[in-house]
Image (cartoon, rainbow, N blue to C red; front, side, top):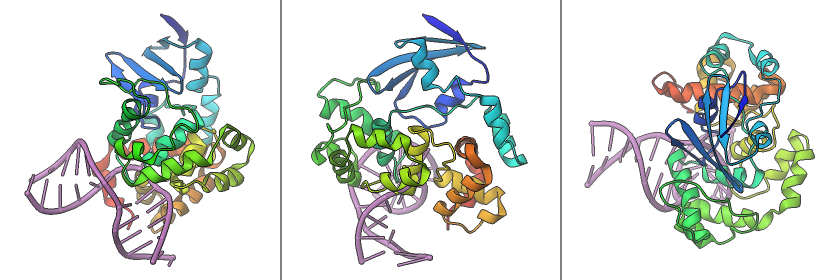
Length: 277
DNA sequence: AGACAGGGGAGTG
DNA sequence: CACTCCCCTGTC
């Protein structure tokens, strides 16, 4: 078992804040499946124990080499976001592979986290033909391998089955790689051509896969957080709040978004009053 | 611009 | 059993 030293990092918050779907708990370890890899990770104080992938992979996946203090400083701009940062300090944005991220978030539209995980799990049974067992751990199907609408229906994708099958046919590695080089507006425009990809799913992929950090994905919880604390947002639609968030929090708005999301999600009794009308 | 339908499972009572 | 909700998009 290898280990590395970490600081300004909370594995627990990073894993539990629902940015990433293919993980399970194994005692003190998190078992993570991502792309081709399956590995497990545990944190004890400032030590991160891991096995299944090299240290460089871990550093990249958890964004351990970015200047976290500086990023947090840039979004610590009011008492509301500060409260969320203080509660979940060490929450990092994971660097996901675009294809897996895109599929995961198309599935997430109007859906629950449990159901998304269940659909991703069933991929292994119906698409890969493997025995998935009780965990979520298998290689993610390659780009282009998920064009069968019927198989998506068997994976309980529901009405999203057609979107997923069609999106699969519309993308390839070149397309997905080309997004890295685009600025926010161009990248957003390109991704939203895909069926099942609206403003929110698009923003999630731009933030979680492409690290476009000014992105402020606004789902129901982020919407509630913003309507509760920011008077300007009170009557705004979710896409308007996304725009507000980008401007208000600036170049690292995506980090603020994840703190706000997790805070609201964990305090539903406070935030459920601030639903979108 | 704004309402609304759309798998189906989990949570609630 | 009935009902609501779900990190929402497409279509009217």
